Image (cartoon, rainbow, N blue to C red; front, side):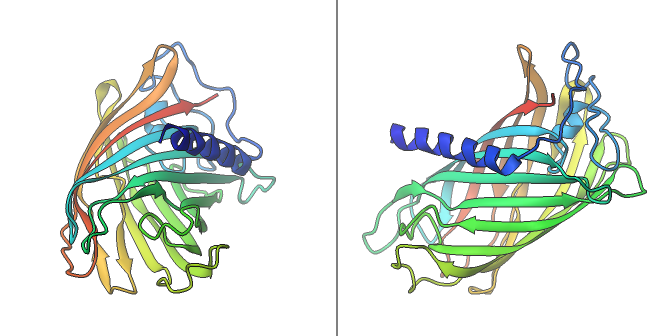
Length: 299
C-alpha cells in the first residue's frame, strides 16, 4: 500500500510537470503579506485577481498549485460499506506564444480508490483510478475580470483491467468554462466537460466493458470573507451517463481558508455532498466528505 501511494505521488508530479512545459506565472507575489492581503498580479488575459486568496479559488487562475485531497463516502447506493479516494492534482499554467490566446491551464488528476462492498460476494476492491488530464485554453477578452476557456478532457486507463476502479477505456471530450469575478468578493460561473471512449486499454482484456459516454456540469459559486475565509458550492460535478440515462447529482457546500504554513501559501477546505439519485442499477456515492490541502506557488 505504501509503495503504491509513493508511486501515485511520483507519477502525478512528473505528469503534471511534463504537461506544464513553460510555466506562465511570474515573480510578483509579496510573501510578507497574508494571502488575502497580497495581490496576485500574474495576469490571466483579463488582469490580476484582487488577492492570492481569490486566485486560489479560481479553477483556471494563472497559479501553480499542487492539490492533495481525500474523498470519503460514508454510504453508497446499491453497495454496502464505505469507500474512499485519495486524489493528487497538480495545476500548471502554460504561457503560450499567442496574443489572442496567451494561456493554457492544465489540470492532471490521479486517484487511489477503495471501493464499497459490491454484491454477489465481490466485496470491496482497491487500486489506482484512471488518470484525467484536462486543459483549458484561455483567450484574451476586452471585458476585465471575465474568463472563458475551451479545451480537452483526456482519460488514460491507468487503472488497467481493474474494472472496479477504472473504465478500461481511453476517452476524450471537450471542456468549456466561464467565470465572472466582476462583483467584489464573489466568483461565479460554470465548467463543463464530456468524455467518450475511443479505445480499450492496451491489455486487450476490456473489450466487453461498456463504452464511456457522459457529460459533466459543475457550477462555480464562491463568496470570500475577511481573513482569507470563503464558502461556496462543492467542487463536484453533476454528471449525466448516456449509457444509464441517469444523472449523478451533487448537492452540498464547502468552507475553506487561504492562509500560510510558515511562508508557504496554502488553500484548505472541507466539503459535504449529497447525491439524490438512487437508481436501482448504478453504484454511486450517497454521502461524501472531502478534505483538501493545496500548496500554492505564486512565484
